[in-house]
Length: 271
Image (cartoon, rainbow, N blue to C red; front, side, top):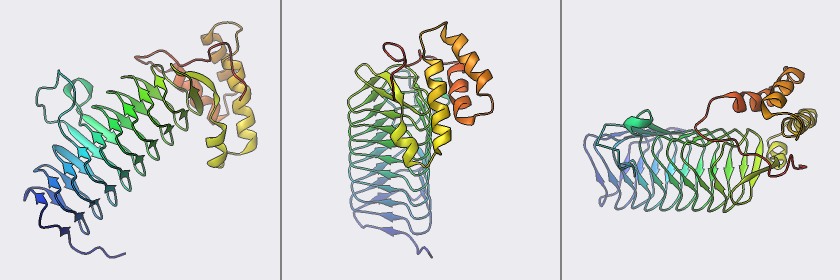
């Protein structure tokens, strides 16, 4: 597809310092700041404000009343020139807010490619979202959170600052997540507890049956009630050392974290 020059509605205010790629569309009553870069094919539908040192990837689309790149909601923020980077082909719906980073968190907030952020969701300062992440309506992601690829959040769920959520996990609606959720896990309840593996997501993304069976066996081992968690993780690492999905979980649990691990309430749950 050949992209034409930009289309900027006469009621939009676009800084002459902003950098707009080919085929960018800026709709009515939008505001685009000095240090903003909109890559090829980006569309701001209407009433969108993009501020700060913000970069939005190609073919992303942002809907009315979204506030992108304004100063973070962090009392320690002191005007440092931090950044917000949003990937390609993202869809950001009405009233979404996404903040840039801070000095205390690496100076950058980053959203991956092909993400869907639904109406009224919030992504705070210094967060790192992977690609193909879905935030349903009213989801709140607090600062310094790290979200893996293909994670789905049900509506009105909230995530505590510094929490990690592993790739392909599923967070149920209206859940408060204050502990790390393993890759491929499913967290439900309030506050959220681990309820098994995200089998629906694994099947939808065409993971093979044998790999899923192996992952279930490893899950039962890791979250059994015998021995300590550290011993069970070490046992799983030895028994399933050639199984990538299992090792994703082992490495996730073994990595250092600011938050505790989200665990089943009473031993493992059948998935």
